[in-house]
Length: 253
Ligand code: BTN
Image (tube, rainbow, N blue to C red):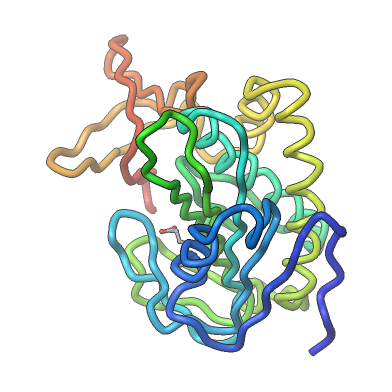
């Protein structure tokens, strides 16, 4: 396998096996900025304890992309959390760059990427739980099914290989890192509104009926919008409900 070529702002830590790149990134991040700068990226060929959102396991055999970016934005937690949408756009655009004609790539709220209607990637954002408002670090984890995908996942899953794309983990990592830089500059220059609009242009299901599963209840309604904080706006017969975390299902998914 060739070495990834990343823009010089990134510092790559390449591992064969790790429990979880997010966990490893967190262990490095707590050592402080002098040791682990903004832009450090932990990449592993496999994970033995890959984590998904909401306490799920992320299946992590060899053949897929597992990476976690350490970021140190000087922003309150609620603003820094917008970076998961920045990452979603970067992955989307990276996949569009690498894709063959005729494939559909979409983002899905809150942090999934779909290829041809099935989940190909997920993002796990974790932040330092600081006493102050500005977290000292943020970990942006990305799992992307390149060569293999789970058959028994809660959301129907796919991989680039299954969809017939020849791209490797390294092709995807390189394209993702380049697009992440350009989307981060747009976010810094123009704010979340630019990101929000672009995310909505690329998203699954705006205006469609959906089910949202929360910790203790299931809601139905129409996916109306995402708000200034990235929360989902669900229209329930003209009454808008704002949802900041949950699992979303559209008809047939
Ligand atoms: C999701 O539930 O959709 C998010 C999945 C995120 C998985 C990635 S794989 C790399 C990084 N390390 C982890 O343990 N999780 C994230």
